[in-house]
Each structure stands twice: as structure tokens, then as C-alpha cells.
Length: 127
Image 1 (tube, rainbow, N blue to C red):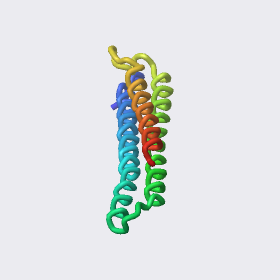
Image 2 (spheres, rainbow, N blue to C red):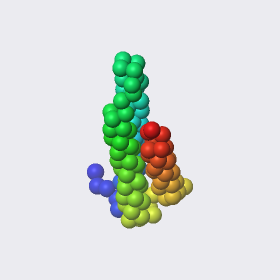
Image 3 (cartoon, rainbow, N blue to C red):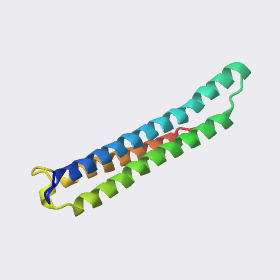
Image 4 (cartoon, rainbow, N blue to C red):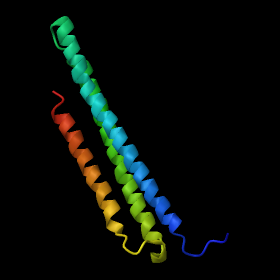
């Protein structure tokens, strides 16, 4: 079956790819949050068993967790930039009539900003 010049499947594939990267970035950020907060659990266990808190493991856990959150944030941000650049190269005929080129990009940037805020929050509260 020959394809016409206009193929909306290309656009929809780009949208699915952006959403997949958004999900992946959110999952990485979620793992980072859990790893960061796991240090508090280890600190609590050390306090209960030894009577003195051990901050070395909690600090390492928080650092690794923040690194995961930053990695997830970067994945979302870079994928948003790539998506925006790719959609800009598509002919208008490949885009749905009511499609806003800005929405997916803005949503991804908003989630990236929330990731930066989460990383800052984890850094401030890792004491």
C-alpha cells in the first residue's frame, strides 16, 4: 500500500515517543525519591539498634537519590526539546487540525521544573 506525502502516523509516533520518555523520566525520579528517603529508614534503624544515629548511610542515600531525580529531570527535558525540534520539521499536513504544538512541550517543561524543585527539596531536607 503506497503512502501519500502526508502521513499522520509519523506525528503520532513522535507523540508516543515523548510520552514514553515522560513516563521513563517520572519513573527514574520516583526511584530517586525512594532511594533518597530510604536513608532516613536506615538512620532510624541504626538509632533503634545502637542508640546513636548513623548519618553516613543516610547522606549517601540522599545523594544517590538526588542524582536519580536529576537524571529523570534531564531525560524529560531533553526529550521535550527533541520532540519540539522534530515536530517543527513536520509539514502542516501531518499535524492534526486542532493540535497545539506548545502543549506537549509545555507539559514536559512543567514536569522538568517540578523535578528540579523536588531535587532541591531533597537536598535541603537531607539533614
